[in-house]
Image (cartoon, rainbow, N blue to C red):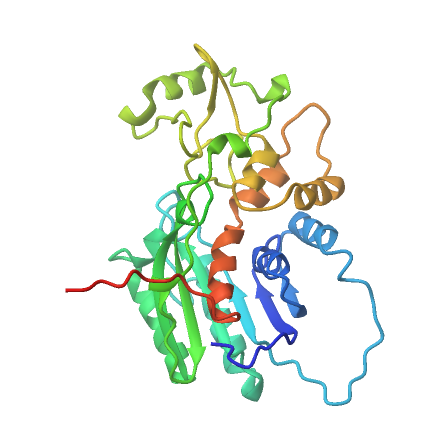
Length: 328
């Protein structure tokens, strides 16, 4: 844990940083941060990140006396496509040159950091990373970190347990330098909110489902492996291909009339504020009268902000869920 926090500035390094979910979580908790670096290949995601944190990214003259570039926390969510059951499952073996194998670049970065190795490393990825064909890479990842003095633990977390009405299960691995073990069992959970709180009241006509093939998939619904679900109590996993394949499900407007989730709704269902979305939309305007693929992709590739909030509440603030005392 970061036991010496006591209100100090947390230094964070974000690799495969997307639109800055961990940074949003720290901001929401009121924890002051200093970004050591942020790395992201998607130019449009970088635009969104810069717009969302523009007030914090202004150039300031700094002294180099006693300069310390050691991150307190390194967060990486390396590409999931080659782990995911929705992809071709090429895996992430080192040297395979798949996108998911970039996880080993993070290991190399940490190895080369010397005395400036981060105190904590957090990795997020899809559920399939622990499948029998993929688990060897996850196990080796933790083994490589152990050689550098880290103790790792992992847990499958669902966004619905952290207030968001989205069925999104992802593995989180927390590795801490020293002998500390991160226990996920007492993370603070939040009751799932009503899906209606996340939906817009009035949406443009271009969000309506009009393709006959998609309507057939909706009719097939849960009875088909290729069906599309109608959202009732919660959305299903938001992906980066919401426009072509709405894995999240669709909203029923009337008998036989459905619409896609809007870009704003997808951002809300990942835990971002409307101000975050508006800032991102301003620098990624898209084509007028059409759905914005960049904003959908950014939401689908992101990590639910409230999950990071809960992890940081324990890791940094020492806040945990009170366990019920059972007497026998």
